[in-house]
Structure formats: structure tokens, C-alpha cells
Amino acid sequence: DTGVSQDPRHKITKRGQNVTFRCDPISEHNRLYWYRQTLGQGPEFLTYFQNEAQLEKSRLLSDRFSAERPKGSFSTLEIQRTEQGDSAMYLCASSFETSGTDTQYFGPGTRLTVL
Amino acid sequence: GDSVTQMEGPVTLSEEAFLTINCTYTATGYPSLFWYVQYPGEGLQLLLKATKADDKGSNKGFEATYRKETTSFHLEKGSVQVSDSAVYFCALSHTGGFKTIFGAGTRLFVKA
Image (cartoon, rainbow over all chains, first blue to last red; front, side):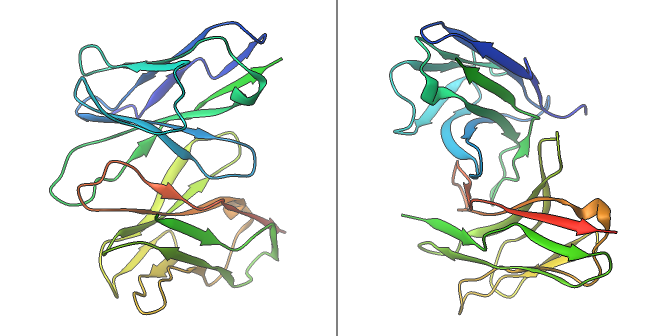
């Protein structure tokens, strides 16, 4: 068990460019989550996958954002036409479905800076 | 909607001092409550959790008790160390739910 990994750890881009981030969850975890964290704030939920199905999207996830989890393993988060307001830390988490409350395990995050 | 409120930081303490970080929540039903810690340059780590009223979560000398009557989950440690310097997040999640709702975080500095 190597934990949740994210790539890249840092991304600097110019406004208007597209960026894509990758998340590799803990291997036996069937649930995967994306969060966004801005400076001085806690993480905010963006979207959630159970296996390959995207089951919930936050209102924070505008139509410029798209997330996929094609085979129920790794996931990608793409931001098109980036804006300065997209600058944040993007966190991925995974969990194993239980009958109670899942414990989510977080990756180190991808820090996005839009110039 | 559900929300979590925690005390603003930064909190600055001397080594071996007693720590309390206050956390209160607003939620329907009976959520599970969590404390996560984020060390500099690292990802969020689960510190402790409690899943029902009066449960006490504990780990690494930290503890927090789920108080339904006051909707609180205050984090305490009897003697902090410099290595405890980090940002601490209080959070809640519902059984069968898919998202965790976080507070804004409280930064702790511990001086030697």
C-alpha cells in the first residue's frame, strides 16, 4: 500500500491553457474523490466516483472542469481554458466502501498556479 | 446545509503546553466527525475520528469527544511537541455519504 499519489505536484500555466492532473488511488479502494483547497481554507468537495461511475458533481465544478475514471482505477481532472481563479491545491482522496462512514485517504495534492 | 466551524489561528504554544482547538458543527442527523492534520509540504492525514455521540477518538496523544448536545468535537492534547506544528482540520461526513465537509483549518505553531 503506497498511498494515494498525484501527478504533477506543481503546475504553472498561463491563463487560457488546458491542464490535466492524475490521481492514483490506493489499489483496493473503489471510491475516489476530488477536492479543491484554496489558501487558508479547508478542502471543498468537487466530485466523486464509485468505480468508474461519476456519481456526484459539486456546483463548484463548472463546465470547464471534467473528471474521468475510465477503468475504475486512476482518475484524471482536466481544466479547460484556465482562469486565475482556478489557482488552488487540487486534492484527490480514495476510500473503500463500507456500510458505515468511509475514511478517506488523501494524496499530497497538485498545486496549480494560473498566471 | 452542513457546516463545520473551528477556531481561527494561528495558535502559538510553548512545548509541553496544553492544546485545545475548538470545533463545532451544524448537520442533520448523526454525522461522523474527524480531525485531519496537514504537516508542512504533506497531504492531509486522518488524525482521529468518532462515529457516534459520546465516542472519544484518540491518536498520538490527541483526543476529541463527540458531544451531540453541544454539537462539538474539540481537539485536545495534554503536552504538545514542536513536531505537532501543523494545520488541523475538523470535518464531518454522513453514513453512506460521499463527501467530507471541512472547517477552514487551524494552524498550530509550537515553540521549543
